[in-house]
Amino acid sequence: QVTLVESGGGLVRPGGSLRLSCAASGSIFSINTMGWYRQAPGKQRELVAAVTPGGYPNYADSLKGRFTMSRDNAKNTVYLQMNSLKPEDTAVYYCNARLNSWDYWGRGTQVTVSS
Image (cartoon, rainbow, N blue to C red; front, side):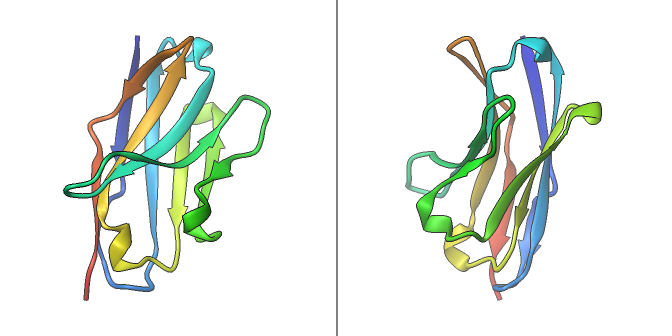
């Protein structure tokens, strides 16, 4: 069992920045990958970024380098730095952990980009 808690969402103007956090607890020793996903109203959930142990994060091509995923192993926390935000980035952002083909999800945090 893995528990994930996201934080850091909010309202931001176009061109602004936000940093999301995801704290993991439970059977974290068995996590194979971690990632960030997002879901906008009326759309399916899509991958934002993901990282494997010992590797570098991979990003969705549509983000064009605006997002950066990082981790703090001591705090069992991963982050998503979002820069140059656009209205189309508005969505609920979810943290994901894959544990031997089992997927665990946080409750999500709302990101709204609007003037």
